[in-house]
Length: 283
Ligand code: GDP
Image (cartoon, rainbow, N blue to C red; front, side):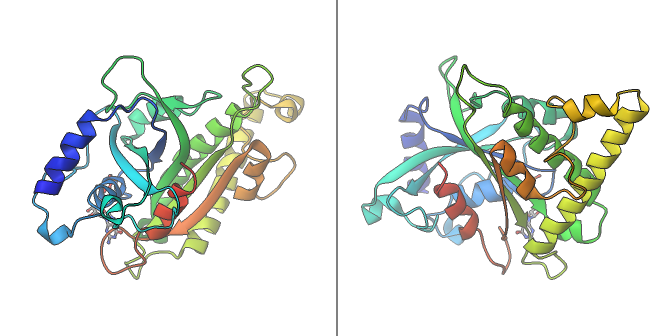
């Protein structure tokens, strides 16, 4: 219990205003809360922890936790106690957002500006905002395997990527917006029914392509001309023009760098270290 208490006291005493954040998005049930809990408890042995457990929150505001990476070596496990190791820690916030469809628009608003920021629940003084450095979009690779979850998951991801794409055109003076890395974290790979990361990637790309075609057809049906669509910086066409198939690589044109990495939070699976390293290299 003592380390938790210390951690808590320490946390509340730290000024958060300058810490960067990583935004955690994804459909309900993907494992966002589980991941947050895992990273937060990292240095402890889970079997001896008796402190409060992060619960799936139904609140309307994002909840944040403060985490530290080893700034000399981002690949250092989240389980490592950096203080004990005498390592230089770099702190950041992991901001867990409500996955409920009705609340998604609020999460996306944070991503739409040239310099995306979020007001963290940890920031107590008014007005202080944290700069968003990366987005982790978590998916349930087992639910994707049976196909039912694919359309809804892809719809959400489409909106996230389209928001980031549109953001690319919103310039702050002459400065182009900073690039935004996106990690699609294919979770629950401990389950043998789960799709491997490569299939999660190709299924999502195919479904995003279908959504793209359907949405542009909707626009054509509603009287928006081909020329308008082609001109369409502000259109809803995700990715590069003229491409028949959608691929995440097309997002590079808009400085949105998408990686798909598999892992697991619970069970006997590949674990969460690769996600941790990805995050550590970007905060
Ligand atoms: P959230 O709605 O995205 O916050 O999802 P939760 O964190 O509440 O997780 C939803 C459910 O998935 C819970 O029952 C978790 O225990 C379970 N879960 C999360 N991660 C994993 C995983 O890696 N493997 C398995 N098998 N279950 C997981």
